[in-house]
Length: 470
Image 1: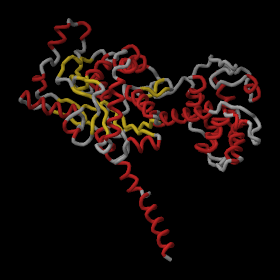
Image 2 (image 1 turned 120 degrees about the horizontal axis):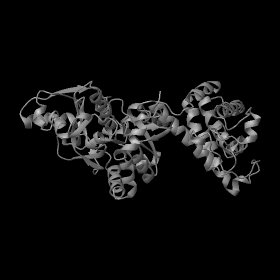
Image 3 (image 1 turned 120 degrees about the vertical axis):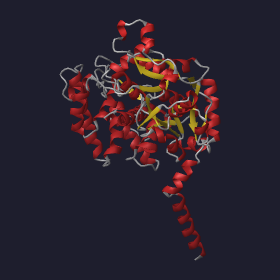
Image 4 (image 1 turned 135 degrees about the vertical axis):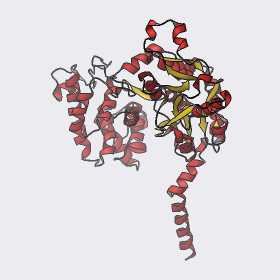
């Protein structure tokens, strides 16, 4: 009876500790050790034309690239989460919905009461964003200056649009005190980006906003009719934010940043998003930039049409095609695979291609092959989400090697119908003699890391597409 009581007590304690409330509580105190144990760093950021976006099928952005480097340094996967309301991003952090905020946050005393900041990633000054006169191209520089605000005192009585919880709001409040007059600070919703406000100034929808000078400068490359020369602050420090209960993570970030900032790699990343004006203009004008056009490639219509034949989200099929060819229909692999979906000529012919270099035929025939693989695996794996992983791996390396990994998994007590930590684990081991010579293996050696990485990269990119593309 006593043993039974102890057993029931243990079960109740286990269930209690695993309750959602306790999980949230643990997340609030998660530090570096737990992050590395679960192999995942959750990064909170905003969706903007410099922080995080999709361009021609590829996730990009200053904060995105910086966090990928941090994840590699810590030896963990990076999961990006977009804050739906930037005014609440620090609350999301402290609630345990992320581990670090990488969103161009200015380090302020008020914010430092809530979170712990890293050493600065860089410094900025806040500038006024205003529209030049309509006929500015026919005017001399001094004539333009005469019609623009150059002295902050002239902001008295003017309407400036910013987010309530941004550092810009606090700066404008302080500026109003300094100049001894009221500035009409108009609050915009927390899901409004600085890029959007700059665009509205350019179009004449609003008169003024303010921005960090690096963001303002790069936007001026596209919006030639805006002026960003009037500085309204002293230099401000920009940093990453973590919970105060994550001192080990903060220390690791600071050590990494100290080295990273001295590297050429850091300068390349920073210049790519804040200095390269021609590249920025190309992105903004592109139909395949998620911040404007929202497409992935010029083949989107064909991808959408054929994705329905296998019941896939079209963005998943697009992610596969990007993995295969980066949407270049003329690419040919060292092994002889060709076209958008990199089909071997024999496979292309078997599944109906007359011209495997034709983009439309490549998509159609590639989907025919995917449909065949889906039918094959549906006999063993009923869960369509799980089955996708087996289909993707089979598309990459051939289904026979995946079947071998299923047999190995079952032989060693794993589940042959589950990919992660089961079949994928043994596919990785098919490059080891002990396993590729196993009696249950029929198709020998396989560089298993290639299909395993292939599946992971396609699904990771698909997750980015889900976040950023309609």
